[in-house]
Image (cartoon, rainbow over all chains, first blue to last red; front, side, top):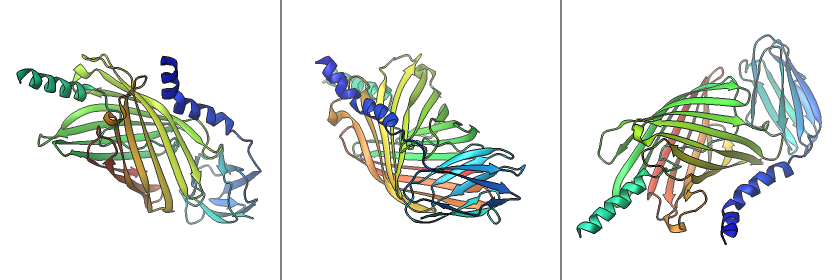
Amino acid sequence: MIIVYHLTVMRPILFLALLLPSLCLAAGTEFTVSIRNHQFEPAVLRVPAGKRIKLTVVNRDPTPEEFESYELHREKLIPGNTSGIVYIGPLEAGRYPFFGDFHPKTTTGVVVAE
Amino acid sequence: MKRSIVLTVGVAALALSRLCIAGPADYVYTPTVEYGEREIDFKAGRANTHDADQSSAASLGFGYGARPHWFTEFYAKYESQGSGPTHFDAWEWENRFQLTDTGEYPVDAGFVVELERPQDHSEGYEVRFGPLFQTDFGKVQLNGNLLFGRHYRAAAGGPMEFGYQWQAKYRWKEAFEFGLQGFGDVGPWDNWDPADEQSRRFGPAVFGKLPVGVHKAIRYNAALLHKASSGAPDNTFRMQVEYEF
């Protein structure tokens, strides 16, 4: 009886603990975008819709930049002369703008899912 | 009669001394960490119960994304009961750890560890910890957290308590998002209180982020929670405002 009770109590915790590794799917297509002179290269990134995307952001400037996009629901600081990984999607077909939060006027780009 | 009064006071004192996982100023943790971000964080809340004094709580903190997967924050916490004055309640040190990169898996995972030192040293130290989960379904963001808490080195020891918190929000616009939040305390983690004695509350919530300069923003969220069990306050209003820079 005690064992049954404890299993009842612990069920939601165990469910969540077991759920996570089962959801560890392999990453999808990989892309790279660079930041140079406070501009994204390429500024237009075409990716397949419906897939999880592994995006490597390489900051070639000596100053930090933050990859930010409300539409993609991502914010990630990339220190100067380093790179970082941003996972996005799976996305429905459409345009998803992103920008650099430290230089929002010049560091702009868009992901086009198609 | 005298005996019943003593018994009532005793039960009330016991109830007050028990660890409450969710205070009126608490918020729903998220598993994401923003590296390098600094923030000044203000939280406040007030809980009203029909036949008891209202309780209020507030905190002022400073947080910093010290590492890509570690955010740390120090708080000074204040509280008041009924018509009594607001007084300093405790220091708190909160640490959130991001265990998976955002979006790497269908569910993002994190972990929170808090250490609180109440002003009343007879309460010892309070430790809270637990896993944090988040996922997106299109424009809907879901969060669910499990929290465990216990007092150590306290004059009156108690069992490890278990609680939970959740939220669902629709990411309509960056400046204004809306949804629901809920908090629950179920009692000792291995011997839950009867359902009608647990504290469960939920209600509508709003969220948003307002840019105020280059890499500076004000982020807010607030909720009006209603009781979903007899062990909860009738109504709780809670809010949080952060200045990020």
